[in-house]
Length: 259
Image (cartoon, rainbow, N blue to C red):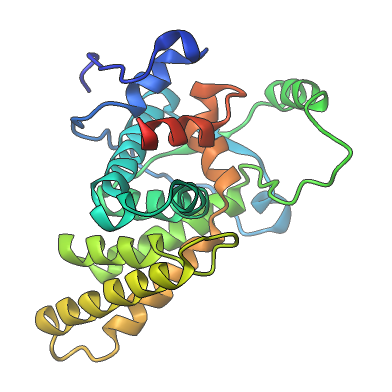
């Protein structure tokens, strides 16, 4: 991976300028590929709740950042998205970046290894996060458990089994991005039309490429819906927290989107 990065935003506004530079790279290098090793894993409940982290954190986080920046630039490249009110763009970004990121992982065939978090690190994180907790209940608390990793891997395997083409990926991303069910949208009806158009073209592409596979379109949409089970907080903690620390990832993504 190239070490040269271009900073789009002012460095003095970001305490984690290195990640901001990575996320703002316009040209993406080849992604690093590690082996996702499941040897020695068990199915007992306590094993599934075990906390894990990336084995090769530096290279995997940089590769994941490149997938994420491709995701944001895909959104920016769509005129139909760019012409939406800013508040709608922000709401769609907030709602859809994680499933689109998982689609990006699948499209880039990115694999990785996880390993147990040392007990000392768990205790340290508990102490550091204690001050960050508020009295209000957290509804999106998704630690990096082995079970969550298995769920992500299941979603990736389903996508890989479909062997989607670049066109199928593109229109599927559009169908996920233009989600009229997101609360607070100003252009809900228009966005619903954009989603239906993305689904219509996706259906046409699938019929052309797989004329004898009558259930493929439904299977693709069902697989896409399963991506919502991968929590944003889990994705953030596993792939980006080692680099950004306590910086709000959504704030970084928002600045990239509107830069």
